[in-house]
Length: 107
Picture 1 (cartoon, rainbow, N blue to C red):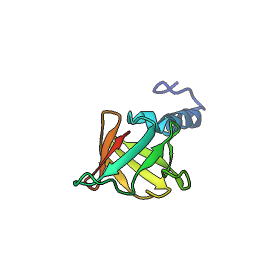
Picture 2: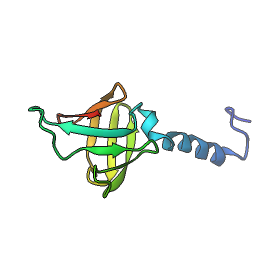
Picture 3: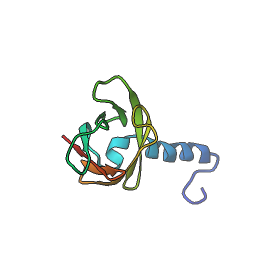
């Protein structure tokens, strides 16, 4: 056993390590599942609202377009769906973050 990894099993340990990062994305950054509304500086709601599921998937508010979220530090990246390519920064308090200066929060 070298470095705590059993001989002949490094691939299994790598798989476990990768799964640890891939599972439970919504809880990885402590962002709560539920409905999020996004508003500009004037307070007017804009079309970035979404529903975040505990498994890391999300949909638009009409539940027609879906995608996934991935967390890295205090950022959340939207993959697929109506927010594809957007990155939310400054995830905090389990319910708030910004996309290009637009505030998004859990309802």
